Length: 165
Image 1 (cartoon, rainbow, N blue to C red):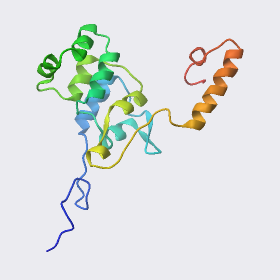
Image 2 (image 1 turned 180 degrees about the horizontal axis):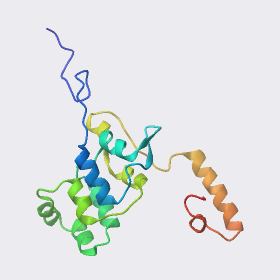
Image 3 (image 1 turned 45 degrees about the horizontal axis):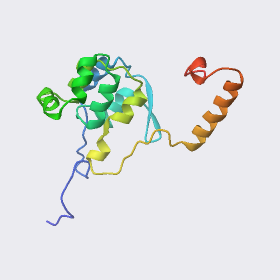
């Protein structure tokens, strides 16, 4: 028998990383988000629940996750600890994963903000995957034009709200 090289997750073996249903339910409850919220992943509209199950590692603790939680956490003492000395943070993180951090800190944010923070499974598989918010140049140009028109009326995009904008 000959082989072409070492096997990895996602190879022809049919092994794919997934979050459990319980983990996704816990994450959704902790963030106050609906699994039925539509999000875009790799150019396709999907339900948030499906995206969290198959595309994002909601249990991994990363510097981006800790920074985001510290900036968004309403509990100032927790936010201070997350930004504090590494040894204190390491002690606090013992036996905790990313899901625990999100649940304990009670952060509320839009699904798109979470997409910026969570690690993609594709990166874990060694594939190139990059989420670059704000790189839709046509969309940015359109937003600038609309904001200038609103400014002429004495309004901002925040005055009209996300849906109307």
